Length: 202
Image (tube, one colour):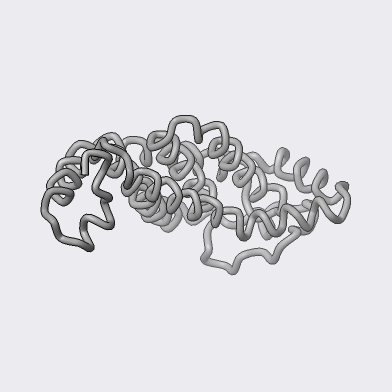
């Protein structure tokens, strides 16, 4: 895969934008994933009061599936060993953020994989959240190219890996974890019941 030309176009565009736009993308690309962390907590807290144990299972699986995707992305990254475009693409505009050190490979984009997994996992837990999480994931992926640290194909494959593997993990483990949640809710153990919530029936 070679998306160097598109990379040059996007980084040239980045340098043509106002300074506040560049600053906003620099902040977003570093800290935007924290929004998914806050959503994980909010969705879990909401699910605790839900009568269906499957709601809690999906809420708990969302961050777990995202962590699984991160590990998978790192494994692929360490196998492919693709150099960062901010060092490899001749004639490209300078990256807006420091180029990651040698050995921190480019393919796939971990940020994009995490964002793709989190977006779909949260949407499976609360479907209407897709209206927020999917655009946020796409914006995160775009930001990695905009600031100059990834090729377009890095972020595209990161999103695909995250969305597909994250979705499969949630779908595969929702049933078993829901049964565990139902058992915990009837156990009477205070900490466990606090974590899963008693549900409306409780």
